Amino acid sequence: MKEANMKIESFALGPFQTNAYVLTHPETQECIVIDPGMEPEPLLRALEGKKVAAVLLTHAHLDHIGGLNAVRALTKAPVYIHPLESEWLTNPDLNGSSRWNLPEPIICEPAEYELAGGQMLELAGFSLRVLHTPGHSPGSCSFVIGKHCFGGDVLFAQSIGRTDLPGGDFETLMISIQDKLFELDDDTIVYPGHGPKTTIDAEKTFNPYVTGMLR
Image (cartoon, rainbow, N blue to C red; front, side, top):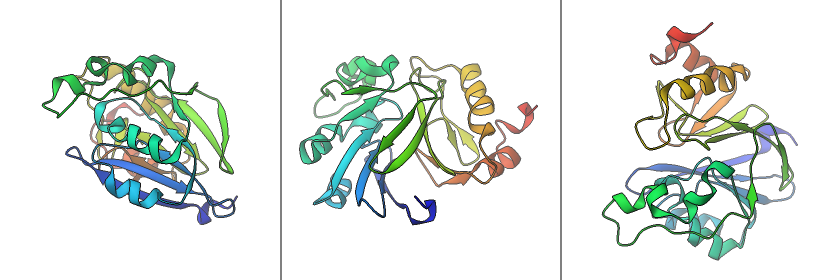
């Protein structure tokens, strides 16, 4: 497919303003959903009448899976997650929702498929590469389609994902950024889990957390 024709919609959802993404293939008109966050009503409206081939989770913190049950109910699409966070979907202590004053904790059914770093997925007409990019959480994954990278909470515009939550590790995150994300082409667009999109080149140049570590 021609990347330029891929339709990318983003929705900042819930109290954490978590970015959910809908990728629509220009020929098949099928979609992939990435990270259906909390308070997903705008996302659900956008998915009405669409064929959703898969729901991909960059990781399983509460703000990235809060709308998963609703999206599943609407679309019947299978869910993909890294095995290191498979249990997080069913356990509110692991996904963090039990530590917040929510109306009820977030408990989802297990994912249908497990992700592995380096694998290629053929979904909805897309060829998608999976990168295992831990550090923010142990099972964090980034999804690359051409020169588009959907990285969850690994790398932000002039910032990085937090590492003070259970399973986070700063040194591991730095390795993921340098050895996985910074190996992508400089003009690759990064679509993060929060905040505006950026590019690999911009983060190599301006990100104060990582500019000093470049080899």
